[in-house]
Length: 243
Image (cartoon, rainbow, N blue to C red):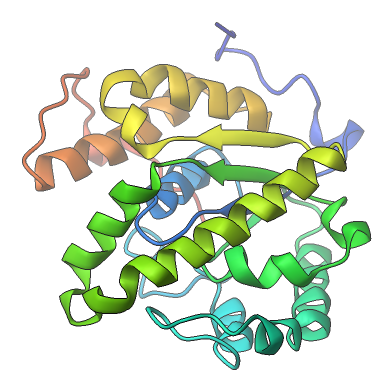
């Protein structure tokens, strides 16, 4: 267990800022993860949504580029997805150049398809968080959330899952830094998982940051009828990070 009372062992002035790709299919827990990462001092740039807490943490420009070649809940056309290679590469590079002074991340389920067509030279520049929630759980969750698209959801989620796994396999061969995140493990092992995430991010997260991140999961469990016992957090005392 690491000491959260200490700042990052690699101060910003002496280390390269992380460029993080969050890879998770729909209903894999990636949105909750990114909300926690925001509390752990990771920048997501300008977000989609009315405010940061209510946001899906999906950058609008990723959806704009990828929606030219794919649609939510529909079969994937890999030839059309390949046509997005240049635009996606250019825009990803622009994002990380814009926020070069901060540890930053991008997230969108469409990246599980889009990044399959990027060159190894591009992939090698990034760190990855791999959302490893079991496929069947993500499919079940997506069908429940979008019943009107349930018929094609299994095929669609399977295709994204295969794309995500192929990207992670390439990233492993390239020696990229990868952190595995299992949403379903949060209920039984949440504190350890979040502390390990904070250590991996190495952004200087404090004990307060950790508790703030954990409080997001507690609120989600309460909303859905789950029961998680943790020390009470006074919401009025939480310092929400600026976007």
